[in-house]
Image (cartoon, rainbow, N blue to C red; front, side):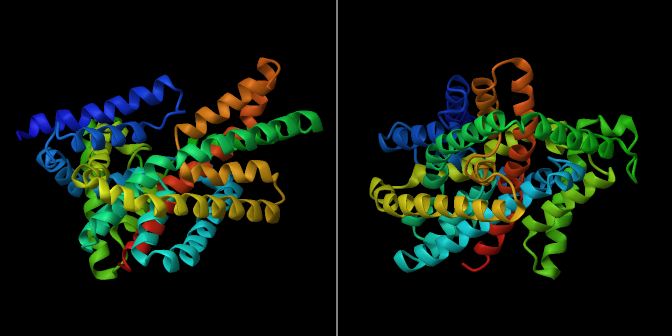
Length: 393
């Protein structure tokens, strides 16, 4: 198939998923619609099984995976992460506890490959799933297991988002009834202002504005970051994904590259389309028997891993003397990330708050930890976990 036709078909399913997510206010996951749609259409024989390969998007992914991870490191400023250190610890605790619980249960029940295929996507988002799928393909894993990361990614937000809504609602009502709302909101607002002051401080490196605002120059810098990560990983044997993530965090902190670098270069959308295509590919080429065989491991991974995330978040919250309902909500952001964490928090604040002032106070109290928790899990923590696990395949 001509590559332009193949790209149009793949992007049509991605766009359909985005529309469904927007219309449902993120209640229907976009990736669920996109992947389920292309799988059904491929099973009906309406599109060729080679459509993803024909689109050349996997080749784009191979080039841009390093820059994408470099971009991930530029998403949230370092001062914000430091101010919300409790959220970072809780998110990491939930992920690590889930991975340990999955290792104990999934490896004896199924196999080590099943464990790797499910742990990364459960503890992260689309980029972690792309890394997992790529690692499984490189290791020559069977097609039955290859579809597992996509299935986990498709389904993980369905149980986690209603649970987060329930927990956040209980936390919001407790804040209002206990009289702690104004105090906690004031502290959260002060942290936000302190982080903003930290961001406003002059960074060690100042890039001239005419270069900083130039999209092609920014893209060049991000590509250099990805290439440098690959160069460093070869002699050090540290996974290039981890190196790229750290380089992105460091480069943004010193002012060499801007925050949200690929978005500034107007290249993020196409890069993410390449990641989605890599995750879609096993579903397009899989037989129905492969998907059916992966359903039981998927359900086990979702139940055991989701329980582990909540338990890890609960334990860390108790140690940090936070409210467990907020802590477990922060931990659960690993299963859906942005923008669902933002939308869920806004929905709870809007429905629980009695007036605009109270709604804003609830947002000030809940939104920063939820956003930082989601970033820690989806953008950073999951990449490290996947990189380590895939190296053992």
